[in-house]
Length: 146
Image 1 (cartoon, rainbow, N blue to C red):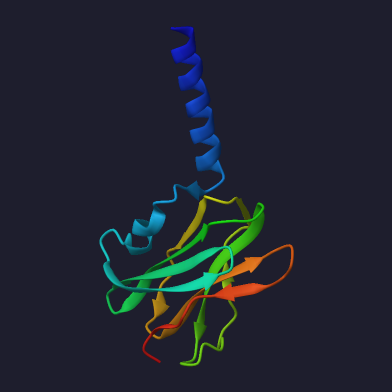
Image 2 (cartoon, helix red, strand yellow):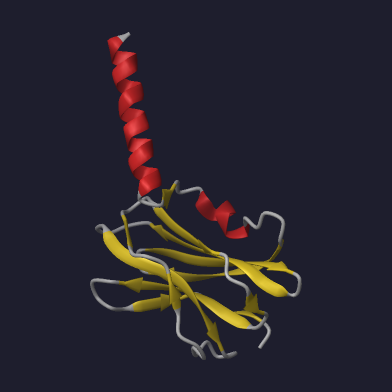
């Protein structure tokens, strides 16, 4: 009985730490199209040497109502990142400053996710990830109609 209780205690502690860090399981692909009462408008991805960056867009009342950004880290050491999105032109050049969430750590085998619930006009956007240690910004392919 003590072993079961201890095992459950460890599992709950790991779960609590995981939730507080904003991490999701590797099966977080479904979160890209999590839109609640809004319609899923589409998604884009971008391959990075050690993972995949994805972005999904939720549409309501003729505007973007929710933007989901995920980074699935497949290899390498723990990295501190900021996830976000940016309005672009058709070539993927930013035409407005990127909007970033707070920084978070992500380790190999984990998925970092951030959902933005701002109302944005329809247009062209990409998901962005800033590596806070190197200052490098990574982006997905462009989504939308410019």
